[in-house]
Image 1 (cartoon, one colour):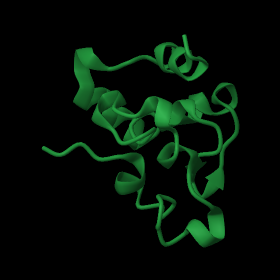
Image 2: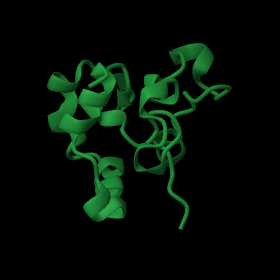
Image 3: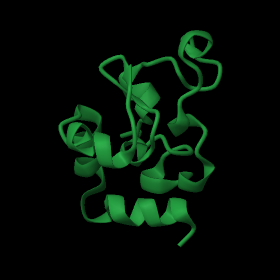
Image 4: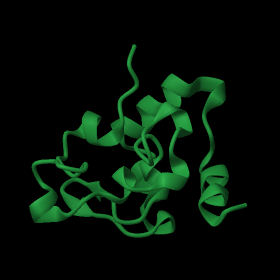
Length: 101
């Protein structure tokens, strides 16, 4: 089973060279190098819930604190948690990685 990144799963077209980049810009998840490899994803592609500026329901979302309740209901977030099982890295760990801790 191949693990998908958020832009592949959601088909948002905001990955580098994607169909919607000219309209909506490149997604922060597709550019965030500090999260590369987390949950076997490319850049922030399997940890998008901790990144500000990702999209949900066609709308750009704000900071982690403002969006995480919505993210916990997201089918992609639930899929990553299920696929990772005991290897799932919690949001606090990912945020610490972003802060360089």
